Length: 208
Image (cartoon, rainbow, N blue to C red):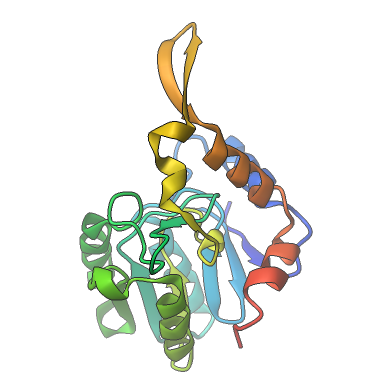
């Protein structure tokens, strides 16, 4: 299934993700759904370098010719971890150069139609505010795609301190001992159960 989700959709991202995985067990990445806000497209599932090319191919068939793919980072349903002092995206938990490199390779087949941008090319300017400003600029010339996992949550910063040991709890079950971070999990559960419409209203009113 390939679905473009309108910005006023009343479904929750968690339900959208679970339904998509259930119906695409063999390959949940290539046909993942995307939320459309103006000409900005964002994911509500995990993604790979085969995800956004499916979207680009479809949009080209609809007459779109220019695409900017923002890449080079992770995303979660909890948003992204940032430094408390200046709000830089965490180099430990968020930024990932390999994702950018893989997306550059995937973009080759589209020629000059696709430009891939590494959001972490300069960690000292990698903030959500800068991403928003760069997105506005790119939208002036075409479609923008946030290529990382759960990118609908990309405006929702939280302190990287939430990942510190104090929030990690040891859980023992039949599979052994593992660590769980209930602070991050509870935030993700709350956000991912809001409707797409509510999330867009709260966080993406700046998109033309």
